[in-house]
Length: 312
Image (cartoon, rainbow, N blue to C red):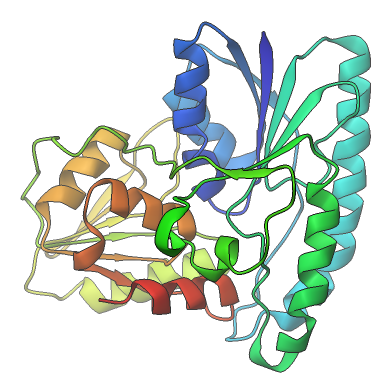
C-alpha cells in the first residue's frame, strides 16, 4: 500500500508529529510518500532519507510582528482559500497519474479525494478566536467541521480521558461522526530512557511562523547572551549542514537530531519554548512539561489557551 503523508507548513510541529505515523507505516511494510515544502520537507528528509518526497507548497501564511494576528489572518485568508483549491486539484491530478491507497493530511484542508481513503489529522476541532471575536467560535467550528466531513476519517492526536492535552480544542464540542482519538503523537515516543545530556542549565527551542519565529529567536539571544547559566538555543531550522555559534555561555545551533534534542531536554533544569501543541506533546512524551516555560506566539489564541492549560 502507498500512503501519501501531507503535513502543513506552519512551523515544524505538523511535520514532527508525522514522524511516529511514518515509522508505524514503515514497520507495517507500507510505502509512505511525503508531500511537503520548506523546513518540514527538510526535517522529514533528514528523518527518513530513504523515502520518496514530493515538494508541493502549502498555504503562504505570515504572522504580524505585533501582538494581534487578526489583521494578518484577514490578509492571509485569500491565500489560504486559493491554497486549499490548489492542493485539492493537485491531488486530483496526481491520483489520475499514480495510484495511492490512502492520504493522511495534517491540517491541509484540501488534501481529500473521493477516489482514495482520506484521513484528516488535527487536534484543534474547536478554533479559538480572539476575545473580541469570541462570538464567532461556533461558526468557525461549523466551517472547520464541514472540511472535516469531506474526509473518510478524522484522527485526533490526543488522549480521550480527562480533557487530554488539548483541552477545549478537541473536547469541548461533540465530535464529528468520522472522528476518533488516536493518542498523542511525538517524535520522542520511546525516548524517555535516553541518557540525559546535562551540559546546559537551560534549553530554548524556537519554532513557529515568520516573522514571529525570528523575533522570538532574537529576543532569547538578547536575553541569554550575557547569562551566567550555560544555555542552548535550538533554532528549529533543519539544514544539510548544522550551524553553531557561541556567545559567552550561550550556544546557538540551527538544529539537533531527535536523540540529541531529547537528551538535552531530559538533562536541563529549564526549558523555554512556544506553547504549540506539538511541542507540548513532545515535552509530555519525555515527562518534561513541569520544567517548561511556555511562551505563546503573540496573538496566537490557540497557544495562549494551551499556556493557561499547562502552566505549572
